[in-house]
Length: 120
Length: 108
Picture 1 (cartoon, rainbow over the protein chains, first blue to last red):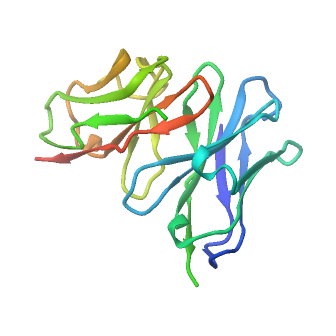
Picture 2 (spheres, each protein chain N blue to C red; picture 1 turned 90 degrees about the horizontal axis):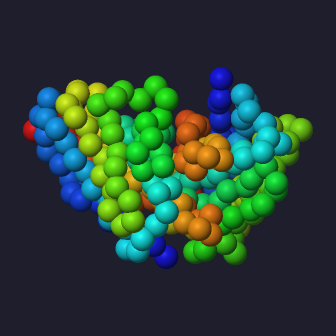
Picture 3 (tube, each protein chain N blue to C red; picture 1 turned 135 degrees about the vertical axis):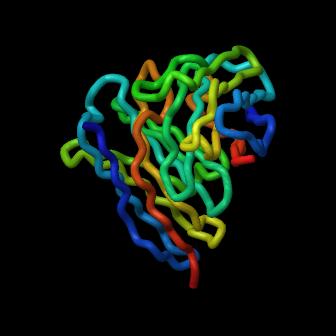
């Protein structure tokens, strides 16, 4: 059974760095074709893709946020970490991690989401 | 950047209706087009990938079609549990992912 779960602080101060962890089970990021991605959704707004890391450790970022994002993986711990620098209240959103399998090229399993509020 | 435009953005329908939601891309894209259903307070659920392949476990009343710039999600007979927001999503050749703004389906 594939599961993913996001963890991190619920409240972040402006200008700080946000670190989010996706802990997953039921698959391995060392398996060919496997990827984990981060997606966010501000309250009442659509989904926004942020970043993706694949089994080969290749990394992809949404262009508008690329300078602020870093995605990494710890295959021994089955975790993917996303850091976002210089946090702003506009970054308030529910952050999801999700799995992609090569051949499907869609987000087939999602975490439950984590609401991050940016406020002083 | 490729933009995805759903049509309509809001839909009011009754149980049993046949519902069609369109997603138009600003330029032709490979058929890495997916559809998701999202209910309030929940994570999205994958319905369709590759424009027309039904994800395992998804009811057969959902179907997808299209290619190039025009894609469609059809619900053959709307059920009470189908009232939700539906998002299209595409993957381009640079491995960049884009979601459309969504179509909200509400009870008439």
